[in-house]
Image (cartoon, rainbow, N blue to C red; front, side, top):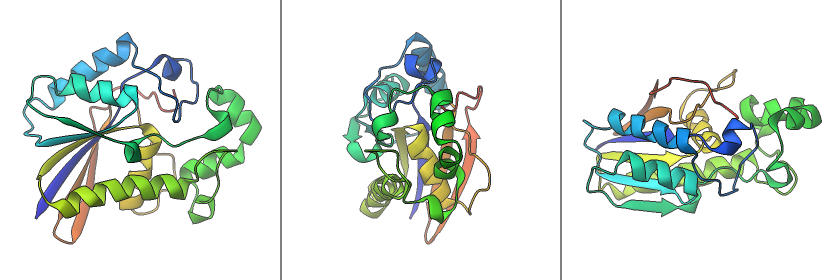
Length: 205
């Protein structure tokens, strides 16, 4: 069976704009983020999505709600689609985080397997994030109920999926707000296409 997942990051929040680490903090969209979600709505206008799964955090849920407001679709929330828990560094400015953790910051985002078990104090490891997000995708695939599924999630979670389903990456994969990646399963094969709807780099904002 062929299944297409359209996986996208939420719209902009005030913390994105201020370059503050959000993680599990439940920060809502700002006005610009809602405008981004309306543009995402246009992207999906002619795509026959059958089911929408979303992180239960406000910014992802609201993005999905706006995006599919004209379609008769129920939004199913899942904690497994949440952003990574960044522990004690949540709320910290990205520049301060870089100064404090320097090399480790880049290791957790683009490093190899040796970085899988690193976490910020009180937070999740990269391995833990990847395993929970991937398990959600594979559970939906195993159920086999839908052929076109939309997933509303977060930058770190989406990056974890890409790293899992693509060959090892040696550079940072940028995940701007409302960017879309397409993950296709066809029998035993899988493919990643994208990015789509990629206008402005707001990675880490």
